[in-house]
Length: 588
Image 1 (cartoon, rainbow, N blue to C red):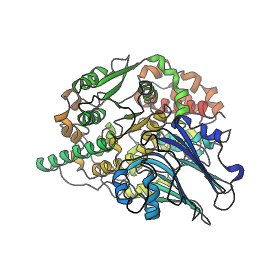
Image 2: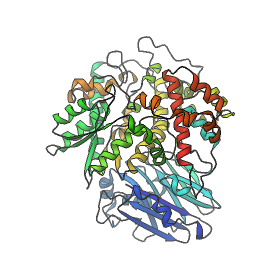
Image 3: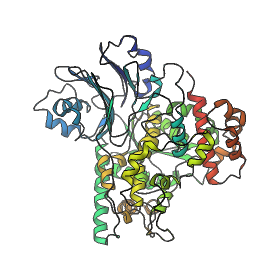
Image 4: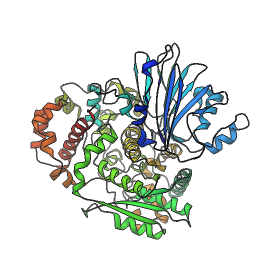
C-alpha cells in the first residue's frame, strides 16, 4: 500500500513542472517505509511505500526487462501469483511484488491489461517507447487517484494535497450541487475546479498527439429481475454460492508479510468477514478490534467480544465518548473531501487503535449493505414486501434513489441553497442504463457505481492511510460484486428475514443468533455529539456561513430554526461537514 504521484508531458520537457521531493513527502503517511523515483525529460513518477509483500525486495518503480515500461502502483493485486505463473515463461520478474504483473500484462495485452486482474489499486504506467501514460483505478474504486492538466502537463496523485500548489483552486459549483444532492461528490468531479478523480473501473490514457482520454474497462450492471421468488432448493444453492464467494474473497486478502487485524462489531457484515477469516487462520488466533461508545444505545462491544472469544481471538475495544466530537477538523484534513457521514470520527479512532497495536493491515466489513440491500431505503423498491407499492414509473431512477436519503437535499433545495440548478446531465448515461432494470436493481446499480467508490471507499482509504494502515474489504471483491448482481432480488429482502436476508440465512450456521438475526444498526456517532458538542453556531451561524460563501445563509438559518427531526438533523450535519471541510482544507 503506497502513495503515488507524477507528471507527464508528451510534447515538451517537464522542467519546473516535475513533482518535487516536498510534494512526495506530503504522501509520507501512505508510505513511511521507503520512496522511489523514475525521471526522464517527459515523465516523472514518484512513490512512497508501505511495505506489505516482498518487504525486502519490492522497491518501486517497477520495470519491464528492457526498462521501457515503468510502473508505480498503490494497492494490491489479489491474483498476482496465478497471473505470474501465466507470464513467467515469457517474462523475467525482478521482484515478488504483486504489482509487477501489470508491467508484463501491459507488454502482452496493451490497454487490455486489466481483463484478468483482481485487486484494489491505482497505478501510473509510463510506456517510454510510445511516450504514453496510463492511469488506472480498480473496478470498485478501492483506491483513489486524482489528476489535473495545466499547460500541457498532466499531473496525478493519490491525494489532493500534492496537486494543490499552495492556495487551493476555486470551488467547482457543479460539484457543490452534487455534494448537496448525494452527500459526497461522485467522480470524476472533485470540489476543486480543474482537479478530477479517476472513476472506478476506468483508465486514463494520454499520449503524443492526443488529449487525455477516459476508457471504461468495467462497470457493474446487475441482471434485471422481474421474476418470482425462487423455490427453497434454488434459494439454498444461492446461499451456498454466497458463502463460497465471500470465503474465497476473504482468503484472497489474507496474504501479508506484516501483522493483520480485523474490525469487528455486532453487525452481520464485519462478523461474517471475521468468522470466515478466523476459521482460515486457526489455530493461529486472529486479532479483532471493536469501537465502543459510552452511549450504551450504540455500544456493541460486548456482543463483538463474545464472538471474538468463541474463536479464541485477541480482542481490543476502543471506547469513545463525547469528548471526541471536536476532532472533525483533523479528520476532514485527512479525508480531503466532504463526505456526509458521522462515521468519520469513530472510523478514525478505531484505525488509530489498530495502528498503535502494531497492525499494518486490517480487514473490514464495508460493502455488504450496498451489495445486499441492507439499508432501510431499499425497502421502497421491494413491492413484494407488505405495505410497499410499486414505485412510480414517472419518477426518474436517480430521483427515486435519492428520495429516501435523509442527508440528501432535493433538487429545488439545492437551487435555493446555491442559487443555481443542480446539473444532472452528467448522470444521463447511468440513468439510461438504470432504466432497463427493476426498481431494486436500479438502486443497487447506483450504490455500486456511485456510493461505494466515492463515499464508502474514499472514507475507508483516506482514514486508514492517514494512519499508515492498509484496509481490505472482502465484500468489495469484484467477483463477489458481480455474483451479487445476479442474485434473485426477492432473496435480498424478505418479510420474514428482513434486510440482507440471503446473507443472514447463508451465514446463520456460522454465526450466533444474536448477530445473524440482529436488526441492522448503523455505524455512526451518537446524536449527542451533534446536538451538544459540535459547535453548531460557530460553524453554521449566519456570519460563518456568509464568510464561507458556499450556500445561502438565510436558507441555513431557516433549517437551523426548524424542529429537529431525523431528516433535518441529517441535512444540518451535511452542511456542517461541508463547512468544517472548507475551514480545515481550504488552507494552503
